[in-house]
Every structure is written in C-alpha cells, then in structure tokens.
Length: 151
Image 1 (spheres, helix red, strand yellow):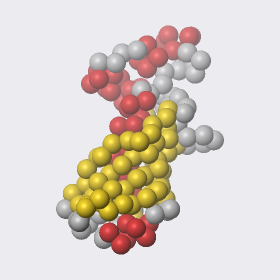
Image 2: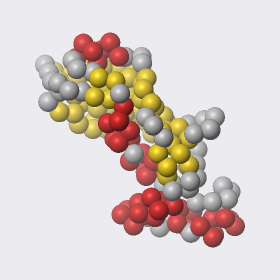
Image 3: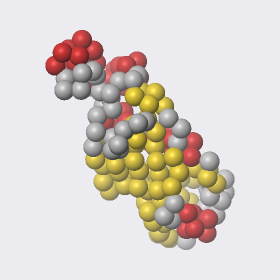
Image 4: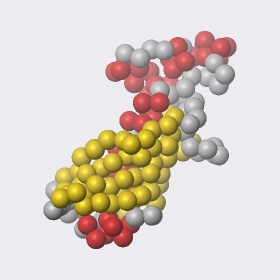
C-alpha cells in the first residue's frame, strides 16, 4: 500500500503506479450484479447459451461490473491518512478494451497522471487506470479517473 499523507506526497507520486491484488470475477458475482442492475443480457447470465453462441465460449462480466471494482482496488492500494475526504469526480475516458470472462482473476493498476490544486485545500488527481486480467497481454479496461482530495 502506498501512503500519501500530504499534498506534497501526492505531487511527488505523479508518474508512479501501484497495483492491487487480483480478485476472482465468477459467475455468482456476475449474476448478483445482473440482479442489482436489472441487466440480464444472455452474454452475461446464460451460461449454456454463452458456451454455444458467444465468441468467448463462456459468459463475460458486465463492463460496468468491472468498472465498479475500481474503488475497492483503489482503497487496497492507496492510503491518504491526513485527508479530510476524497470524492469521485468522474471519468474523462473509459474504454472496455477486452472481455472479462467468468472465472477470470483481475486487478487494478493506478498511475497518477497529474495532481492539480483546484482551490486552497482541494486537489484533483487524475489517475490512469487499467483493469488487468491475470495472464492477458492487454488490459480489459482503460480509464482516466478523477478523484478530488480535500486536506
């Protein structure tokens, strides 16, 4: 875990990366996400049909399921002990560049691209994020994620 305990420490981390441990995305997780979001597309939830008709030979995770894991990985990788709070400011870019097959082990990689002061005590951090599938050459998701940090 990387500890960033001041605005100076955050600025010094620009250009550096940290990666979470891997997490299993299995069919149970995919099914629970489908229930929560009311997105029951067969490619995600119909195992038998996906084995026959999907170009992937199995079900795949929803892109938004994969994206929704970012806060957990972020919290696992980065510690801000002296901040008052941090909020999700949004995304400038999100691309789903590869399928996450059911049964995949995935992790999040976070590279701090920039840290900008937006007003006294507030800093906007732009993180280049990759969701990586263990053993895969390319990331499954690439994104630019903005987090506002208040000290």
